[in-house]
Length: 538
Image (tube, rainbow, N blue to C red; front, top):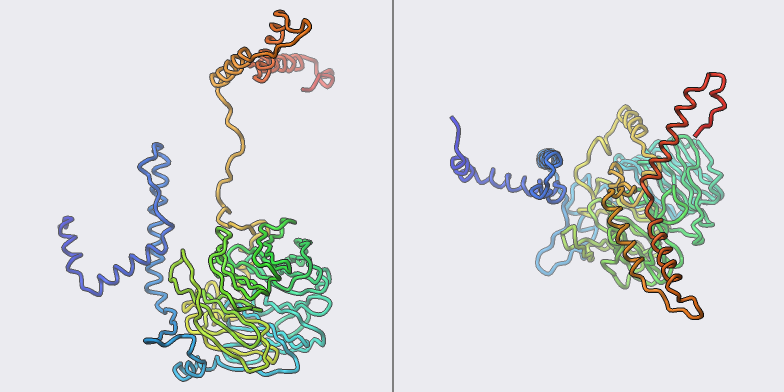
């Protein structure tokens, strides 16, 4: 027994309200995963191309529906933000108020480690947020398990440490020290000394390409492949010394902020910057990228914080009266800005992906005298780490972390066996440096043909006739002293017509040349074997 379309509509109308709501929710999630509007296939005349595009659009719809179902059933947790009633403001809520309302496990993420003899501290987290490396300016390096709050290893290198960065996992980390950059193992063993870079100011790791990027005191940008230790690129930026460096997570492009107010973007296969933006009238103090790679935040010494749209390279918002020494975007798009002993969290109040309007979301004041050095959100947790002059601290920022993690991408609970398997897969999926570009969606696309299509014989003849007519109708200048005779004018016209014809090659010449070549080949074939080596080679 088959149901008609009317019966189907009736069954849809009489669905329970819970199922109707779930269907509406599923449709909204499908729209989120669809790749824009479908192609208009009615205008296509090519039946083969029309069929191929129709099957592709059908496949896109299926994949979007599958992704929506996965999000609905396997990713049930949602990010929670601070909500207030009436005239209350979220930025008036203090950490003590949050600590009284959260569970015991979350309240453990509020702490303050005081180490006044070794600061200020730089911080870095692994992709899963499970481990943290802290590096003090006076030479103290500490590797901490953030889930159990256990100190895994701490060492004293007895020299200046300017920056720290994890490599592909917690087993290796790099430290920019007084003269050279060093790579250490999880147990604190020194594995490599990178002498080619000189005194390094900033370190960043490109996890998809296994490249350790650094900029030294003289403004040289270096890329080194950590899989085999080779130097991939050494670039002179020509902008002088810089302490501002950040990597775009979307495309792997490195951004440097300079004292002239410019932000330059680089890739290892080019000695010239991909983009050079004049962002501020004075020195750039910090740069940060949104996780989607389309937004960039910059801060200048003139007490302005600017948000830029990198798809159009234009400024979309300016926040006045706040000088940020360090900036950091969270996984859910919150922006943290720190200066002195004050931390300000900005949230996007527009709620749409097309327009952005960042406004004050939370504030936090450190102990008076603390000077903030580095802010960094902890992945998959509503926590931000603060490195300052007296040690490092951690505070709760509701809604900052992604609530659902993909165990194939970043698993905070992975075992040693899973870590080894993941390391092998990362090495197999390693991308070459040539794939770093402003628009990575071009990878895998067809390169447009640069060869010009040959015009047909009829089109050549028509162009030739037009050129000859134009040459014949050209008016000659009147000259004196016998140079204006009719014979000379006729001769000049003939020369102009011949020059017009010369621009169009005759088909007969090509045929004659090929015929001569064929005759020469036939003659060479008829020669005896002993004389063939004397035959002319075309």
